[in-house]
Amino acid sequence: MKKNLALAIAAAITLAGCGDTQESQKATGTSQEKHETVKEEGKASEVKTETEVEEVTKESPEEEAKSEEVVQASPQYIMKGDFSIQNISNPDEKVVLLTIDDAPDKNALEMAKTLKGLNVKAIFFVNGHFLDTPEEGEVLKQIHQMGFPIGNHTYNHKSLRDLTEEQQRKEIVDLNDRVEELIGERPQFFRAPFGMNTDYSKQLAADEKMLLMNWTYGYDWEKDYQSKDALADIMVNTPLLRNGANLLMHDRDWTSAALGDIVKGLQDKGYKIVDPELIETPANKETAAQ
Image (cartoon, rainbow, N blue to C red; front, side):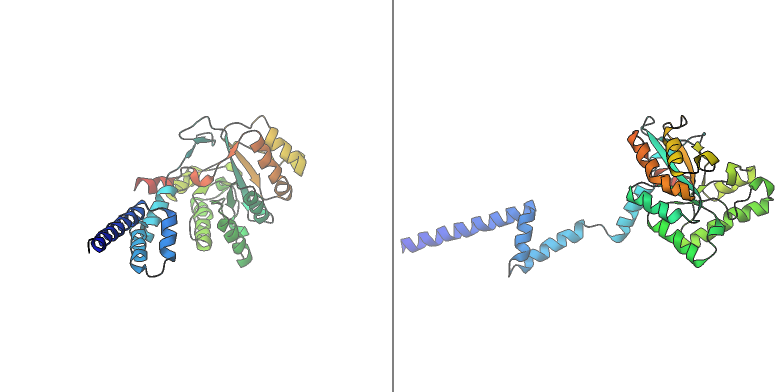
């Protein structure tokens, strides 16, 4: 009798100890116990408890979208008055910005693929007369879906100084409307043809919440640099290359051919290629302030 009683007490203590150990292990949340719990048969209550914990800790879709919006609304770079780019927290960082005008003509999609393969970004400044057909619109969609920001370079690439205010408005706003129709968002960057703005175009760009941008150097329209090797060499070895340089290129055969060498040459010199989406614009600045 005494022996049976002792055995019963020992068994109860052992079971209690096991229960405490299991609860302790559950509290630590180690991945091994979680997997074992899921695999064990007859432990439905424990699986349910773990799922409930995950549901509590997991963000709702609304919270995830809000978190993503906060990240997107936190610019790391600003554009200075000379159109160079500067890291807000580290002004001495060696960075350059890549921009491509007159897109999407014949080479823009291939240029986007080259940049994507090198894991770097550029702004593609587009013209409306390259977006007139469904096929051209699809090219723009592909470039945007690859992660490249789309900038406004006016509808017909006419000198704004030769146009009336109403004509300027159509060149700029109509293109924004067309881009939004194709990719679901309006451009946050504006570059006037030939870099020549008017007081009206500057104000219109501000009203449209676009960052007005020119460049610090470019060469691919000059006859001496309309070949792959010559262009790659001057873009990387020009004395105009400096921290924050804003590089102008175009949708051209020779520029497309040289693009990979240009990126690698800049990186070999210690320059980081800036992600344009991290540059402060009137649009994301307004979002951040809300």
